[in-house]
Amino acid sequence: MDLVPYLDFIKNTAFQAGRISLDYYQKGISAEVKIDNSPVTAADRAVEGFIRHQIEMTYPGHAILGEEYGTDSQAGKSIRWIIDPIDGTKSFMRGIPLYGVLIGMEVDGIVRVGAAYYPALDEMLWAADGEGCWWNGRRARVSNISKLEEAFVCYTSVRDMDKEGHHRLWSHLKQKAYALRGWSDAYGYLAVATGRAEVMLDPVMKIWDCGPFPPIFREAGGYFGSWGGKEGHMHGEALACNASLLHILTSLQSEN
Image (cartoon, rainbow, N blue to C red; front, side):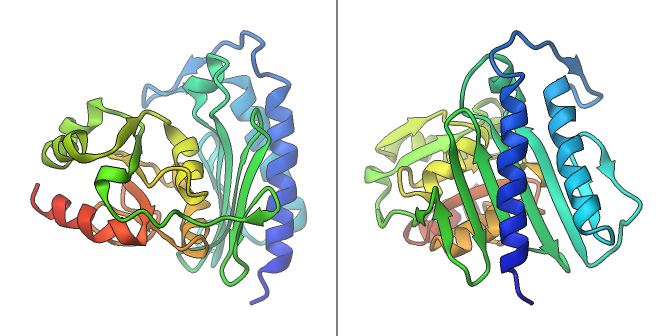
């Protein structure tokens, strides 16, 4: 399967969608509260609407799953697009530039192509299996740091660490890691995939929050998956790291 046309499409679509988000950014946008108690804004809906339209026009036989508009009538097809129009809506609402537009293309349950665009920073990650991982046109690689004592560890929610039963691992990281930084949501994964941090932790993760990251980390030489070492985007939690630290982290997790 030639993934290059899909990669070109996903890059262009993510970029254009991100520029739409900037029309709402730092404009005092208000939000509604969804059933799951998360916020949604007009920007989320406009961006997802644009991405869906692009996919439907270009690949009308493909399925789509998005955070704001759910699953379309093509559910069950072998190719599915996974969309988070604004990952980090809370940051976006406050004018913090760490939010991202996330698009992944899943083939028979495995994400093969992905792009993550950070419009306020104008940084983009993209990858497809066998095509490398790229960061604004240059190759992206995870770092080679192999000791927690030298590692930057990023995270989204301290509150959920204990709630989801990760107290032991979190306590160890607080004691051993070189630095703990709340560079949350999609931005933490950008930092790890480009070698600027070593670990990103999300104790709770929806499928659309991580659509593009499996191929990004495979091609960047790292790992993306569950805290227990199972690769992929459907585990309800997420860990990203370089290969050197994976064994250490999964061993600590098994002791929880």
